[in-house]
Length: 99
Image (cartoon, rainbow, N blue to C red; front, top):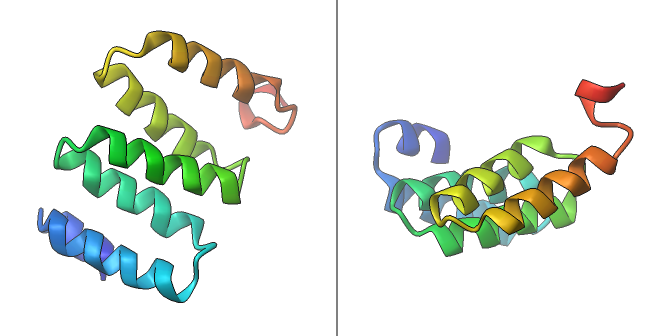
Protein backbone atom coordinates (compact mmCIF):
# COMPACT_ATOMS: atom_id res chain seq x y z
CA UNK A 1 0.00 0.00 0.00
CA UNK A 2 2.77 2.43 0.92
CA UNK A 3 4.60 1.95 -2.36
CA UNK A 4 1.39 2.54 -4.35
CA UNK A 5 0.77 5.75 -2.40
CA UNK A 6 4.37 6.82 -2.92
CA UNK A 7 4.05 6.18 -6.66
CA UNK A 8 0.96 8.41 -6.64
CA UNK A 9 3.10 11.07 -4.90
CA UNK A 10 0.93 10.87 -1.78
CA UNK A 11 3.98 10.88 0.43
CA UNK A 12 2.33 11.75 3.76
CA UNK A 13 -0.17 8.91 3.33
CA UNK A 14 2.66 6.59 2.28
CA UNK A 15 4.57 7.45 5.46
CA UNK A 16 1.50 6.66 7.55
CA UNK A 17 1.19 3.33 5.76
CA UNK A 18 4.83 2.49 6.45
CA UNK A 19 4.39 3.54 10.08
CA UNK A 20 1.48 1.10 10.42
CA UNK A 21 3.59 -1.69 8.95
CA UNK A 22 6.48 -0.84 11.28
CA UNK A 23 4.15 -0.81 14.30
CA UNK A 24 3.10 -4.36 13.40
CA UNK A 25 6.62 -5.54 12.56
CA UNK A 26 9.31 -3.21 13.95
CA UNK A 27 12.13 -5.09 12.21
CA UNK A 28 10.59 -4.63 8.75
CA UNK A 29 13.70 -3.05 7.28
CA UNK A 30 12.17 -2.57 3.81
CA UNK A 31 9.40 -0.44 5.33
CA UNK A 32 11.98 1.68 7.16
CA UNK A 33 13.85 2.22 3.90
CA UNK A 34 10.67 3.03 1.96
CA UNK A 35 9.63 5.42 4.71
CA UNK A 36 12.94 7.18 4.22
CA UNK A 37 12.34 7.45 0.48
CA UNK A 38 8.96 9.09 1.06
CA UNK A 39 10.44 11.47 3.63
CA UNK A 40 13.22 12.40 1.20
CA UNK A 41 10.61 13.28 -1.42
CA UNK A 42 9.15 15.71 1.12
CA UNK A 43 12.65 17.14 1.65
CA UNK A 44 12.62 15.92 5.26
CA UNK A 45 16.17 14.72 4.94
CA UNK A 46 17.08 14.30 8.62
CA UNK A 47 14.02 12.11 9.20
CA UNK A 48 14.82 10.17 6.03
CA UNK A 49 18.36 9.52 7.24
CA UNK A 50 16.99 8.31 10.59
CA UNK A 51 14.72 5.86 8.74
CA UNK A 52 17.60 4.60 6.58
CA UNK A 53 19.72 4.23 9.72
CA UNK A 54 17.01 2.08 11.28
CA UNK A 55 16.85 -0.13 8.17
CA UNK A 56 20.65 -0.49 8.28
CA UNK A 57 20.57 -1.26 12.01
CA UNK A 58 18.15 -4.12 11.35
CA UNK A 59 19.90 -5.40 8.20
CA UNK A 60 23.45 -4.06 7.86
CA UNK A 61 23.91 -5.58 4.40
CA UNK A 62 20.85 -3.85 2.93
CA UNK A 63 22.85 -1.73 0.49
CA UNK A 64 19.83 0.05 -0.96
CA UNK A 65 19.38 1.78 2.41
CA UNK A 66 23.09 2.67 2.53
CA UNK A 67 22.81 4.19 -0.95
CA UNK A 68 19.65 6.12 -0.07
CA UNK A 69 21.30 7.38 3.12
CA UNK A 70 24.33 8.56 1.12
CA UNK A 71 22.10 10.40 -1.34
CA UNK A 72 20.32 12.25 1.48
CA UNK A 73 23.65 13.13 3.10
CA UNK A 74 24.94 14.46 -0.23
CA UNK A 75 21.91 16.72 -0.58
CA UNK A 76 22.71 18.11 2.88
CA UNK A 77 26.36 18.48 1.78
CA UNK A 78 27.54 16.26 4.63
CA UNK A 79 30.31 14.81 2.52
CA UNK A 80 32.54 13.59 5.35
CA UNK A 81 29.68 11.40 6.55
CA UNK A 82 29.21 10.08 3.01
CA UNK A 83 32.87 9.11 2.84
CA UNK A 84 32.77 7.43 6.26
CA UNK A 85 29.60 5.58 5.31
CA UNK A 86 31.02 4.42 2.00
CA UNK A 87 34.21 3.28 3.69
CA UNK A 88 32.17 1.17 6.10
CA UNK A 89 30.27 -0.46 3.23
CA UNK A 90 33.44 -1.22 1.27
CA UNK A 91 34.90 -2.97 4.33
CA UNK A 92 32.06 -5.49 4.19
CA UNK A 93 33.41 -8.39 2.13
CA UNK A 94 29.90 -9.45 1.15
CA UNK A 95 29.42 -6.23 -0.81
CA UNK A 96 28.25 -7.50 -4.23
CA UNK A 97 30.65 -5.37 -6.30
CA UNK A 98 33.69 -6.80 -4.54
CA UNK A 99 32.85 -10.49 -4.33
